[in-house]
Amino acid sequence: MNEPIPVTRAVDGGTAKLMPDLDRSRAWLLTVDGAPQSYVDLDDPAHLEFEYARRIAHVLDLTADPGVPLDVLHLGGGALTLPRYLVATRPGSHQMVIEADQGLLELVAEYLPLPSGTGVTVRPEDARRALEAVPEGSADVIVADVFGGSRVPAQLTSVEYVRAAARALRPGGRYIANLADGAPFAFLRSQLATYRTVFAHLALIAEPSVLRGRRFGNAVLVASQSELPVAALARRTAADAFPARVEHGEALERFTGRATPVRDEEATPSPEPPSGAFSVG
Image (cartoon, rainbow, N blue to C red):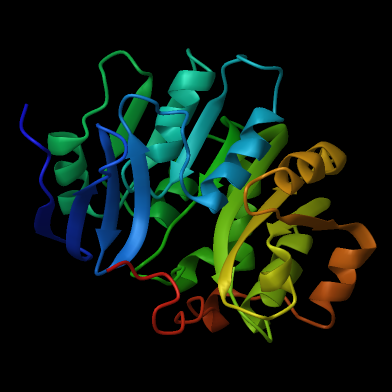
């Protein structure tokens, strides 16, 4: 049997590479311009290599009883890691994936195709426009993992965008976003202030070293109009190989401080990561 070999291809967002994991026979790492985007194990789609993906999965796991199907809108597709996870853990779910990079979608479809009958629909569209067009109250969960290069696009950081997300969710639905920032957290604080204007309940999941400003890293924001299962989330994230903390309530208010909400006309992308923060090879 031939060993899998790396694949390199120009896509809309830069140079994409699919690199095989030598320790897992059908597992692949996707990078774009050297920045890790997705990790997929075709034999074990419930295996999540990236810590931020596991934290998002914890929220998904606690959104409904085990195995209950969900209607999920994914903004940002990559190699479809989380849609595959839900196919494995919640069969019968209906999932819509919005990914603006047509070339990336073609690469993933060629080398990491989804099995038929998964209930996953993939569309090459702009995330903001697609979100604003979905029917009101049509999603149980929205998962936003959209990066232009290594930065969250400005159009996905404003009050107007957050209102569109809230409109698309059913009562009690949850919005989950993968964000990235470092001290002094101007972007992350402004995002918390922005989401606070629309959603009644917020939580932030991140490693203590990130929250203390010791390094640049990912932070998973969770928002809902209903109470969040913060105690259960805290137990799960604390038990991970790289433990995380769940900030909420007064502690999150203190972290947000005097940050103000962001409107469309003043929105900017998330900060550029320091050199080497997320790069591979």
